[in-house]
Image (cartoon, rainbow, N blue to C red; front, side, top):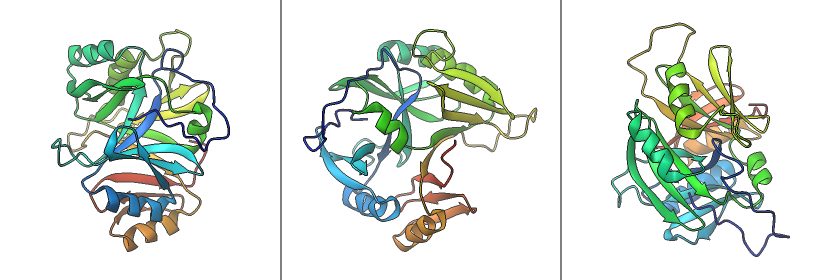
Length: 269
């Protein structure tokens, strides 16, 4: 959620990209946590991340992968009575307008919009209960580097992919034709979101033309690219996490706090 991620150690100042020119796409991922040090230790072991402080205060940290900021951790789950979870944030041109659109369409505004210089953020839920965030302002320093080092993609598991695509499309200005917006396509029963030609998100709801499954708990799943999926799974178990599902190229893991995430060897999205 904190996007002021430039540090003195970077070789040069990169061009600032804002949500006025790139919007509708995932632009950050953040994890709520109960124990900041334990969370840092777990993800350092499993994903090899290093850490630095954030300007928001002692309860926040920025994760670095090969020196590139890739994610944020906020140890506010207990303070703010929030669930422990990974949450994707989407770039918007106007946070107030986006929040109003969510409410008009049956969604929920849980937190914000709040000011987090150099921008504003809000934590929301769609009308099926899936949690997501929005961000208005400067994007993470060196935007293209973040796109390469950040999650391979985020995926919404929901009951009705088509209905969800309409909701998010109206809130986040997908497929509006405006310069910088995202494009939406339907491929193999999934909704595929592209930003500047890259697949940045997917929405699925199970078998094509199947009735919505009431047992599905709609949620956004964050996928991180790794070199060794089985190795990450074993390391997660060794450090107090658990493996919910494991295949050759992908594993769904749970950290010791209960937050789920996916590690994948696929870079093609």
